[in-house]
Amino acid sequence: MDRRGCARQAEPTMPVAAVARRLGVAPSTLRTWDRRYGLGPSKHTGGKHRRYGATDINRLELMQRALLRGASTAEAARYALTASIAEVSDELAEPPEAERAEVPDRSVARRLRMAATAMDGAAVQRALAELLAEAGALTAWENVIDPVLSALGTSWDGTPAGPEAEYLLSECVLGALVRATPVLDNPRNQRPVLLSVVPDERENLPVYALAACLSERGISTQVFGNPPSGEVLAVAVRRSVPSAVVLRAEQLTAADVRLLPRVSRGRQRCRVFAWGPGWSPDALPDQVEHLADLRAAVERVEHVLLGK
Image (cartoon, rainbow, N blue to C red; front, top):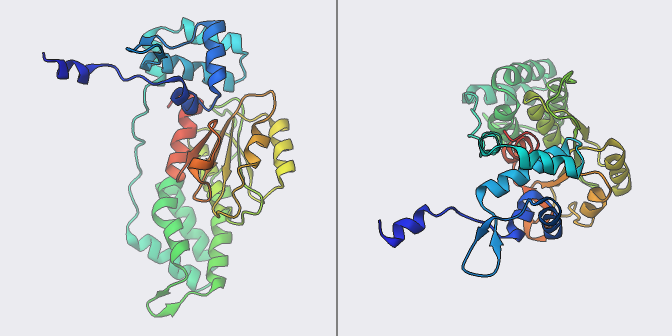
């Protein structure tokens, strides 16, 4: 085999800064874990710096998952170090692409939009209930609910849809998503995921959609759909001790990066995610991960908490 073939087969590695961003921690935290517990990079390059291989990163993710479940740092490190390579690979391998429910045909969206335009609240509620039951929250949102909400400002068969139709549909969607988010008796996560819009953000339906999607996967949440102040949000995070915080910003004017350190400050460990088009990824702190859309939010939160 030639040298180029060997290079192609070489295991990819990552520097400490990249691994820190992946885990949402400071590089100094990784160096502390290496020094105290031996959870450091095992790969060597031609330079002076060691780099993290796939197994190193998997062990760190396993440790972080234990921390998010409430383990002490020493307990989490011991758990990650004593897990066999096979166990680490099985639990922390990249999750397969989620199986997508069958996409509803266009008649479902047409029916929903016509019911809203006709101001027929009962028909809207029935259509939403059937849609969520058959397609699930993620597919329903991506393929029907969000597109119909966006299209209500245009005409349909020559009939203009006024703002009253959008108000009706929004209220019905909110109710349907709340009903699709039952209280879980035995959630898969020990500590809830706190979902909130940021202060001054008016578009709150996406956080209810995320709550419904996570509920379908057995993940419990706490939802703040009414925008709290930064102070209220920081206190809520401190008192509820969530495993993760997802902050939704639709508008650029509502996303304030100064809020992020306030919700991540404290003794408890939690991951912080900035979700939505209002956030500028380049402006986020290294410890905060940006999530672009609903599917990315669902899959990333599930993977960080549960390794699935």
